Image (cartoon, rainbow, N blue to C red; front, side, top):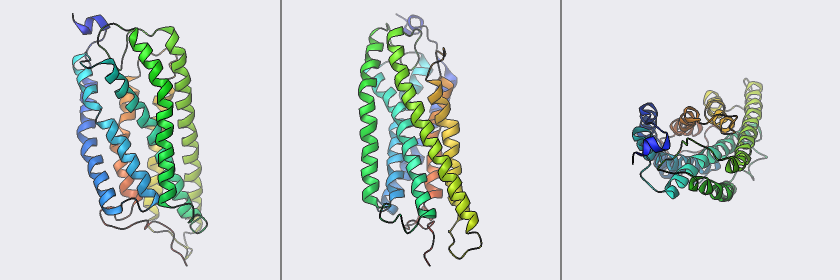
Length: 289
């Protein structure tokens, strides 16, 4: 039986090409970034800890992209429904974990620039590791009800499909909206935190422009926050709002846009850790007098 006809889904080579490009670009960028972070910076600073976890989150997303390429190129899903659930969860987890880790990086830079002395006891690698552990625990806990409901939804489908579905039963759709609202609130909250951090750091850098208590590489510091806001407003926010539904049966273009964040994050590592290629940490912190 032709799965494409049964599922009412036709191949979409454009999306297959987009995901293929993201895979080809994102895999080497994040693999090399993770290697550099672990080899040259280790887990000795909070920024490095958050960036390592962000790179891991992106790599998990990237390794799921080959199946998206296959699905949109052929219009069929060759694996089991369990595999579809896992790959779908990996994508949703990436948005949540990436949004939180990027926000942690912003807060860490805020403390380093605005409160360099008072925040020393907070900005430790140990505390960063604990925070990262809580993030992954949160992601796993959220996945439990989400996976249960998604598995029920897939049982009602005939044929082999994933990522896009011709019909949505009313029962799981209500529960899906609950998780969608949760993700939207999370992303909006993280965006608000990033806006506050950007404003405070910008004000501090302007205030110390001609002061002896200066910050190295002011442009790089501000680029970190600008990039964070760009990733939230372009990658995370549209998808998080789009999955609420509002009568839209597919949000594939928004999903493609959200996936691009795994190619942008390596730029964040470069600007966040001065002398990224060298074994040097936190050179963008305020110099002590």
